[in-house]
Length: 201
Image 1: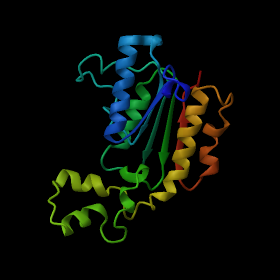
Image 2 (image 1 turned 90 degrees about the vertical axis):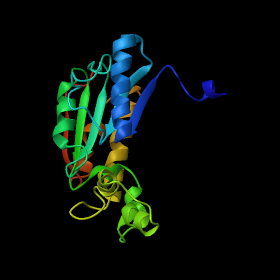
Image 3 (image 1 turned 60 degrees about the vertical axis):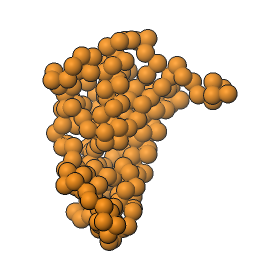
Image 4 (image 1 turned 135 degrees about the vertical axis):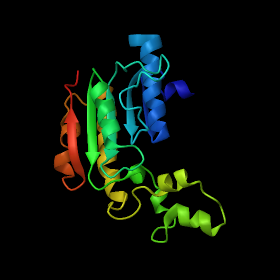
């Protein structure tokens, strides 16, 4: 039944945070092991725990530069994965690439974690109220971008949705023009600080 609904020969991987790192490494692996025969046609990392520039400290094949379209979306207030690391990863790509930086957005701008226990300390405060000990390295992760100076995370959702859907539609050929991609900054001027790209194929 799945074969009538999912085209397993044309796949785009999307991930947030550690999931962003996973899709970047998957793209590296697919490029190194399958090249143009890969069924993975692109990857999208949302605040991806990026290696930066596919560091040589990674073992092969995970240090291979992906040879497929990549989209990076990050928040300029992200204290978990630095903007400079995302920009470095973007700069490493030699194929079609796109980088979108959201103004006043932190690491959790792409999830609904900040919507848990809002105004009362978020997920971290809820866990502490339930006597759940949170390691210090995780408490910051759970709340990054959930309070001022970051805007409410919901302001990041629409530009992110447009970017992801437009990228997928373009790669799969549903949209022949890049208007939905290039117009994101115009559509969301208060939310999108940077929308840049290398020439798309």
